[in-house]
Image (cartoon, rainbow, N blue to C red):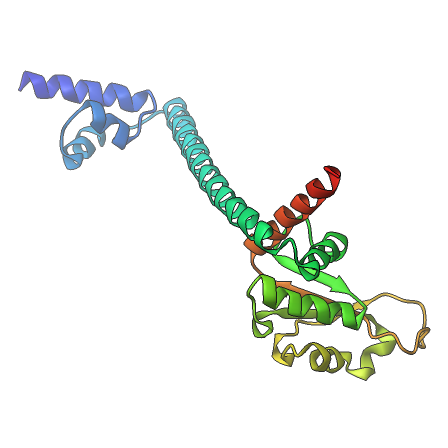
Length: 224
């Protein structure tokens, strides 16, 4: 009985110092229902409640730091594996001028900073080239590619999404909402202009692979 009295006193003391039930149970090995019964008659003061909140917030912060570190380590592991894969593929493809041209074009017009793979241009033949290139070297069929047209409002009535869909053979259902760029003109300045098209693949791994290939191409030329 005296042991239980000492454990109850310790539990109350720890509670008043800002310890949670979980923390107290690590030092006082009793049933949670017993602990709850002991502490119901020991209400916390405002200062003690503030101490408990500080301790709780500190535990949450430490937990978040540990979780972030674990996710960062996992991300680095995945990126290293992707780099190894990209290096092996680069060695296999690099003698092909078509491959090298596609990497160079992505270097000029592809997405670099965030998101997935994306390539934008207004030249229809260049876009056809990159669509076929993506299918060939990234093994991504065009039926899985998304597209978005960027164009000025005076061209809206021409339904140029269909023009691009037909020439690139990317299904109309894959086109995202067209972005109309601001302009002060009420009429077309360039009658033959068909807008800029962006081909999008929502896979960060493909963007990273393109950046790895781009860096390998750059390093190769730096060595010459």
